[in-house]
Length: 301
Image (cartoon, rainbow, N blue to C red; front, side):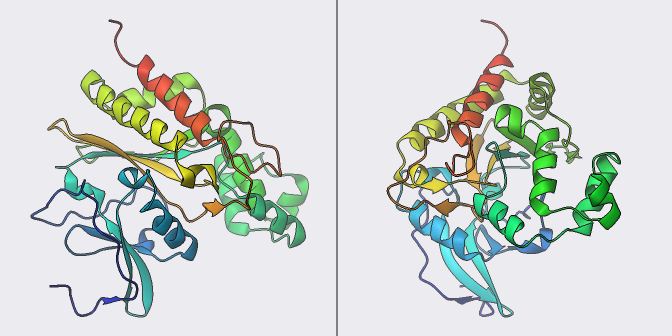
């Protein structure tokens, strides 16, 4: 029985057939982002701070062929006056898994964010401090004088340091099965650096790589024929990689807070280079590169 402190606000969608039963709750491991945005629910569920845009995406995704590649959506619940999106906790399918978060696409900011930044520029001191901590020479003279940078300027600078612009994806964080965590991938940019990071994540295990490649190729096939995908700008979304010592592995799309529907009849191929106004995000180009790099980690046959 569900705890009485949780009040369902919207009817939940049916559970995914991929959900495996779990006899114990596993805590959600937050590699990157805001830990306060998450709560661990009951019966293998994860509660994430509600976002209207993300809820709309989940509603569409539950009817799309991508349904098996995202956590199942179970509606929106309220706890202590706060709305949460309830979804499957993917970690409950694994026994002490290794975890990797890869941010997909060639940009992590929406075109709308660029427009608003130009219309209502608001320098951010916190982002200026993050920039200086990585590279004291990065701010312009004006930014240094005001001790602030615009959010879009910071994000574009941040992406120029990583493989986002050069490969169409970047590694955000890794947790090995032994509990070892790494989030220091800000300057992991070259193909060689990314390849080595991926090899380390899979512990140089070809079987794990083959499992991931199978999942990624199935995902690519589904994306290329998905009505949802062709009609949405997918920005700031990640792929969550999970594998354990039992040989289980899987890849899921997560984080749809910045994913937005396109005005009809506009559609995207997700491989065309982005120019402001075309809404392209480079998601499939990044996935192509990720598959190629993982393939290169396999020993020659």
